[in-house]
Length: 200
Image 1 (cartoon, rainbow, N blue to C red):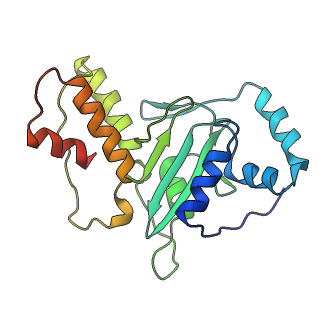
Image 2 (cartoon, helix red, strand yellow):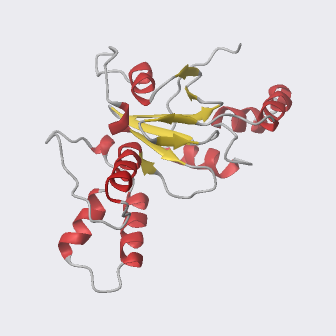
C-alpha cells in the first residue's frame, strides 16, 4: 500500500487539478499521477471503479460512492471521497464524518482534536456542481421526515461567535446559494432572506 503525505498547495494549483479530472471518481492523487506520467496504478483504480461500490450512510444521510468531501480547519483544506462505503481522506479510511475530521484536523500547535464532522464537512455528490454542508443534508432529511415539506424556511443558528475565515464557504458557493434562492422565489427577495442565503 502506498504511503501518503500531506502537502500544502495554493488555490491555483488546486483549481488546475480539479480542471484536469477525467471523472468525479478520479482522486486528486490519481490526477497528479496521470499528469506526472505515473500511470501504473491507474489501471488498477479503473478496474476497482468498474465494480459496484457501496454508498456510505449515517443519521439519515446517504453519500454515494465517489462523493467528494472537503473540510476547512485551522487554515488548511482537507479533501477526500467516499470509497466503497468508507470515508477515504488523505490516504486513510474512516467510518464517519467525525472520525475523519478528528483523523486529519490538527490544532495550531499540531495536536489532534475532536471535532463534530457533521459541522465541518462539505460534500459534492456525483454529477452535481454545488457543494452542500453535511449538517444541512442531515437537517433536510430530518425536516422532510418531520413535516414532509422541502420548501419550509429554515433558521440557521450560529453556535459560536468564534468563526474564522477558514470556516466560511468560498464566495462562489455563496453566490450559487443566493442564485438558487432567487430562482425559487416568485417574488422580490427581502434583505433578511438574502442574508440567510449568504450565511449558508
